[in-house]
Length: 157
View 1 (tube, rainbow, N blue to C red):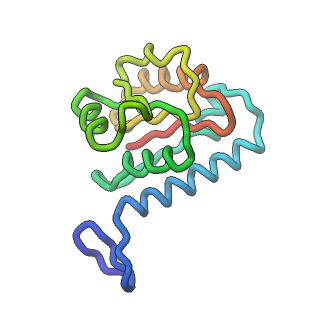
View 2: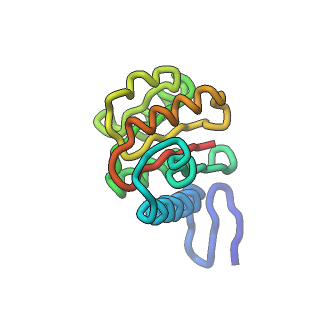
């Protein structure tokens, strides 16, 4: 039924790009998180953000996590920011995926630039290598910056 070819999965006569599997999984997680948030209180404290608003994406490298996230952001017209580890990743993501007037990108070391902003989501690309202290700062920032319902903290590992 399924055959693996270079970067595609072939099922019967249809070719499905690898990022589509990631996209569909992420879409399900977004919807599931939104449903869970509708049944809970709306205080965005640390425990609430971790329990009901955090979506953690873990998968093999180069499987289209960021691309799937950006596709979903455009589909649902979400307002948010993406935090990245270094300038090289920042430039690559800007070059390939984001128009200058869309989702803003920030370096993790410059979190203060986000203060006072209002977002529906904050995504951390490369979250597996973020230090625990920085992650606490990110969640503290999320408790101030995330507004609306539902909101998402997306950790791409």
